[in-house]
Structure formats: structure tokens, C-alpha cells
Length: 61
Image (cartoon, rainbow, N blue to C red; front, side, top):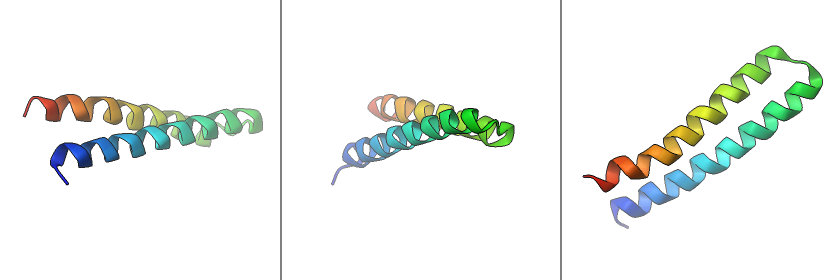
């Protein structure tokens, strides 16, 4: 499998992880757990950011 194929797979997995952390964020809002809320929000943003930037970076190489 080529490098771009692996990048696509990693990007999809990171997008799925981002949705998981977003759902965890919403769930922890209802439980009023500030620590988990902050961690889930940060993880969702980081996963989505990497998932969107990774293919762009490798398309220029």
C-alpha cells in the first residue's frame, strides 16, 4: 500500500476518534465533570486538526 493510502487510513481513524471525544465531551457536560470535559474537548480538537492537516502536508511532498 502506498504512503497516501496509509495517510488516508490514519486520517479516517483520527476523524472517528474526534467524534468519539466529542461525544465524551457532551456526556461529561451532563455529568458536570470539568476535568473530563476539558480533556475530551482538547483531544477532539487535536484529533480533528491532525486528521485535516495530515493529508494536506503529505500532498505537497
